[in-house]
Image 1 (cartoon, helix red, strand yellow):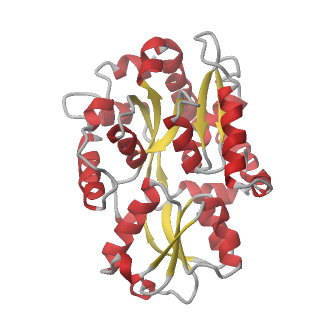
Image 2 (cartoon, rainbow, N blue to C red; image 1 turned 30 degrees about the horizontal axis):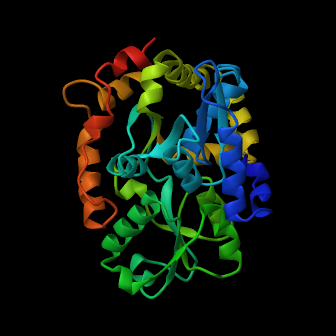
Length: 328
């Protein structure tokens, strides 16, 4: 479901969208010979997955990629096994691990460096101005986490603000109707709010190495279909090379798919860092994978905020032979 066609979402209730999407995902079957089911949601860092499909690197007989309308539906589709793989944030992945879901991190898709933000109406000029205001957040770990970090930076507590739970694809309409004063958001919704007059008062560039996006896979799928799963990783990095070798075509395709201009898409990318194959090995492999330290820090914050009931170790989701999987 593309950003350009996001109106499709609004014609269904949230529950209706979930049931419709789950039916589509489940209908794809689970036989080893059938395509892998990959669930995703709108976010510029995930776009190479769709580009891989569109240029033939990930044909339909290898993988069916479903763009779901919001990240909370993507999380639930993976949790209930309607998807074999999913694009999730690190905090969402930690939540799944704490809930007993057995999974593996296949590769790190991106790190947020400004792509996630708190967008405010013009009257809210500083973090201190949030006191007593209405803040809309998506009720997923990342939304709660960003709210927590924002309030800490503002020296405020939950009791100082009014939190409104709402899907990110409804934030623009809420802004127009004056139903919230600030929004915990991310691209491309962040840019939509900016076009309406909202401005950034806090973003992920102020909390480096805390928000990562991952491609994750169920443990049993990883073991049973390792060759197919690793091919997804191969094609991801192959697609990243394509974006360097043919930047104009890649950028044009992605911008058209998102329903934005090339300039707008490039602006979205400025808030992201996309790890190369070698950087992924540094993050996921070796005696001390670089992702472990920020993950442990994130676990402590999530424990303090009540997002996790007990500590978890990200090493449970790392594969000792991941290099053989992501390097062809």
